[in-house]
Each structure stands twice: as C-alpha cells, then as structure tokens.
Picture: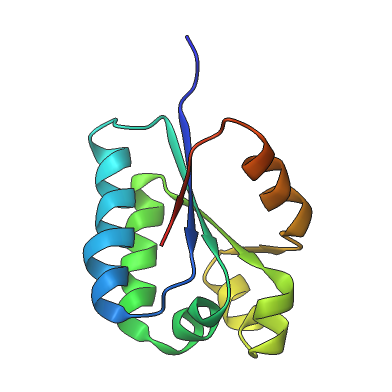
Length: 113
C-alpha cells in the first residue's frame, strides 16, 4: 500500500484562514484518515504568528495530538524571533530550502496557504 503524504506550506498568518482552513483541514485529515500523514511547514509571517498567539498554539497542540507533524523554516524563525518558542511547542525548526525544492520537483502533494 502506498502511503499518502500531504505537505501544507503555511505562509498566511491570517487567524481566520489559519483556524478555518489550515488547522481544520490538517487535523480532520488525520482524524478521518483522508491522508496517512500530514506535515505543516511554517514559513514567513506565520512563524511570528505561531510564536505570539496563544490560540493558534492551542490549535497546533490539538493538531499534533491528532498526528499532524509541524516543521518550520529556520531562517524565518530566527529572523522573526520565533525559533525558541516554536521549539518549546515541539515544532521542528530546520533549513527548508532544499526539502521544499524536493517536494516541488516530486509528485508529492503540496497545498500552499
């Protein structure tokens, strides 16, 4: 059986979009088995939003509990002063340039929000 992996590139720091699209779809995807795995890639302004907003932090913890994986761009996290907070939340913080390029060059699904 082929594993079905979904990557979500999350760059939109709008709370409504974050709550009612990114977190809702990712969490429900895992709870309902729509995908075998879901990884949310935090990039850009979203890093600052995640570090500062307690409501989205709660939603991230709920998504993690459902099995959603989170990873963040280290350059964005460092430039926006968010690295330490994201690591405390259990979010992987790594260089994402090469992995994102690999995803884009492959047939692996990538949803960009």
